[in-house]
Length: 381
Image 1 (cartoon, one colour):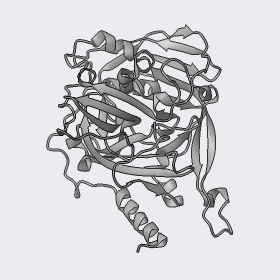
Image 2 (tube, helix red, strand yellow):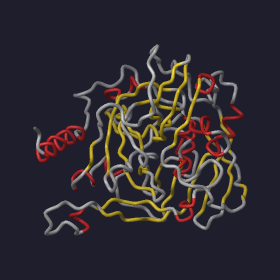
Image 3 (cartoon, rainbow, N blue to C red):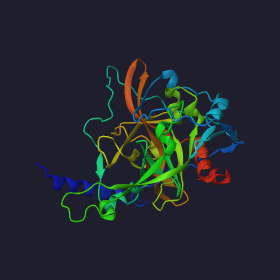
């Protein structure tokens, strides 16, 4: 029988192995790592909107249903106008005022982010009941100063509405849109939205002289500006889930490491075909929880996987090791945002997946504009 101490040592050793950088000598680059074209997103002058009522309730566990017509929507590439409308975005300011910014896409010939793979494979006669833990629970609690303050775990932050976010710049946090907006109005907690940074026990002084370990404290920072794509606001959830992401701008810069964004590659171009993310799952209160798994399937907008997750993990930055041509090495980069759970009905069979939103070239251009505020920085990564 494995003792708690032996289990802790085993998990620590595993996490240390996962933190070891992947170098070119360990994993070869993709045979032909093709550069990704990022179209230019040109914003128009913002239009003032009425102030938000902040009447919505926070939804920590987003669940949607999608059938074959939903899954294959936009495949013909004839929805450029509709997609451009979805890439418009709302900006919510700390005083409750709002603006709407329309955009124009310049020189984009594949508005849906590229061709789709085949739909998720279904097995005749096999059905799943809804669950967010698949088989044995494969999540790991991240504890101790070395891990909580070390990259990549240090990039995970708490959102005051109960979700998770990921640091993507010195002043910006990427999270799920449903953590701040229900599709009709901003949630009540978005009125005074805050981002929480974990402070390990040895730093906050709560562990001195005690035998039992203490949980980390949280240092909260106010959000100055929140941006949500119109694609999340204007449609039913089975469609708007493709746009379930939001960017929060902090009142002042932080000093933690952050993770760069990348256009989501195909699973074959991910080291080990694995995705990873850390979040604040509701069943492990006060703990940062890490997990990894293989990509099961993907559409042009969503990543389908069976990474174990519970409510509260929504908004986690989904990352993978992506080959960086300029650095000539594998780098961890955010390639998606964990959204929630989706029933997928294909050919009469029900399959359930945990789902993350892919960062397509257009979404990359949009988020990059939100971060940098000028178009030249967002044409190429």
